[in-house]
Amino acid sequence: MANVIGYSQAIENGVYTIPQQTKVITESETTALVSGGNGIGLVSAYESMEIAIEKARNYGLGMVSIRDGHHVGMVAYYAMMALGHDMIGMSMTTAAPAVRPALGARKLLGTNPIGFAAPAGVERDFVLDMATSTVASGKVGLARRLGVPVPEGWAVTTEGKAITEPPEGENDGWALNPLGNTREQGSHKGYGLAVMVDILCGVLSGGGFSSQLARGENMSWVMAIDIARFRDVDEFKAMMDAMIRELHATPTLPGVDRVLVAGDPEADATEDRLANGVPVENGQYEAMKLRARQVGVEVFI
Image 1: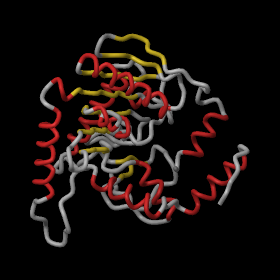
Image 2: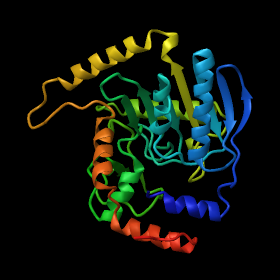
Image 3: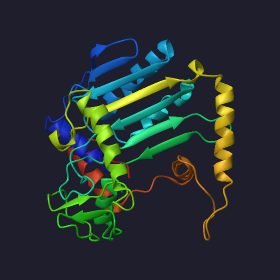
Image 4: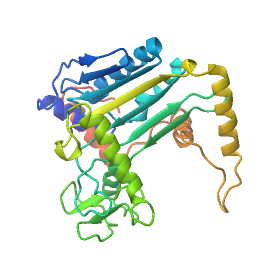
């Protein structure tokens, strides 16, 4: 929801090309290079995953690298599109610099999130949605709007000093930490994953890697894998169920209720939102209502 205002302003200011056209530039039986037409990233990523799923249906595997794109929102959404087709999905996207390389002091990488989804049987599907930074940049912005501090380890100044007071907007004086934060805690892992995302999304597509992107530009990559080309789908799902149950049954550390599997927190939140509504931070909600009135959309509440 925090991006709704930005989307509408980008359309109004001509930053996004609307109406847009997702165009296949080159393709083979299993691959495609797509242009998002400089339009809304949510549209081009969705249409590209549809292409990947169709290729996987015909040839067992489909992957698409997307250039000329913008923000795609929840990256795992596109991986999840494969679930209903008894397929495994994977998705990722670059972003303008917000994260420092491991051992570096200057932001050169995007948060470069990765999404992965695999279907289960009676258990919840496995859905991973993770930034390759210690935390997604939107959480820093939310903390700033709420007026609360952020934990040490999320971000540092260019001198390497830990930040607890949320910075005022994007600037060169601070950077998010790569996943792992320090050398001793494995910062090279988050750093390496972020560069991997840049390669598949930005270098493979030719759209540019993180440090070449302007704020709001995003290059993406999606893939679908047909499980039936490897083994019986029901047997695959039964093994997924067994694995998930075993993980859930792990004895917990003191003070912890249960062991979670990727996708559990989001599924819990979905059930809560469907029952109790979607919470929106008051300042953001007022800003959304103001923007709606500016563009002539009726506001009911």
